[in-house]
Image (cartoon, rainbow, N blue to C red; front, side, top):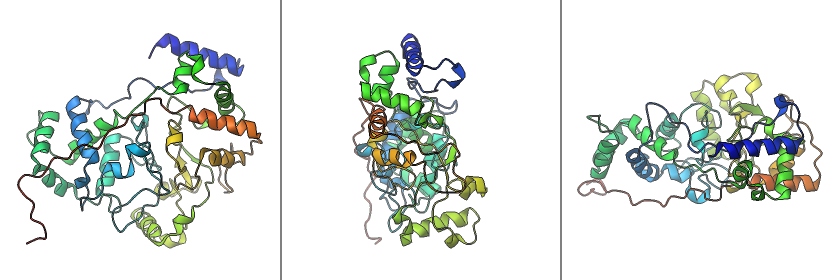
Length: 372
């Protein structure tokens, strides 16, 4: 990133908005060229190579049917174009799959922000009984019987005598996910000084996003998220009443200490973890980068298009008692709604990373089918 171009882009935006008060200037900017990485897991080519295979390998799940890519598919904007995320066979998930694209810039993971690192995020679904349903120890033994994995783990973690561990599995997947990034959207180029990158309608939408529509109050920073939790009153999706969806949600509620989960008829987000009334229905602000690639929207996939999202916020969000007080009817015109959608589409990268599913390495010897 060229610092001069960034400064010019931001300066141009401030002039465009006519803001004389620096304290009120919007905090939106291009993404840095590289995401941050933890000191105990620096990204290396060897880890990325290993992590790529692991990401696409369904043998990380109990029955060998589900991989990371099952829910976070490069063909679907690194998410999944369905209401709820896929689940382990004979189960159903109760939340929509967020994208992995640019997830490396997040400071909290999952809709309820329950972990802070990509490494922790990678470990969670592997053992979840309704996601990949795999025992960590069994997974380690399984991968040790694949010669190619023995080679790649030794290469990625050369100082370790026994490198095939769940922690290293997570580190490798996280290293790969840190390469699934892009920062060449029309917005990024515009902010770096290329004023022809966005057209007049998109620029108008940006002004609305920061000004009248108030989107930037929560969707701010380089990744267009404050990584905080807000109650917006997202309406219930009818699929939340599906019996197997309720089974999964009830299981999660019991895991968090709720004794009567059937009394709760919808996903209440952060409340499941904190049990604080103010958090009832609160969810983490998702990034808006590449949002045009990842319908449907919201934690339950209830809104099918960006236009529906704009209409939802134009009405002032949903009707719940603890809704964020900043959400009020916006009274946007049709032209303004169209401009907002156009700006959101301008957050799509020109070169979205795409990874072909790799050929997976075989087990050593032959596997006896049927149990003998």
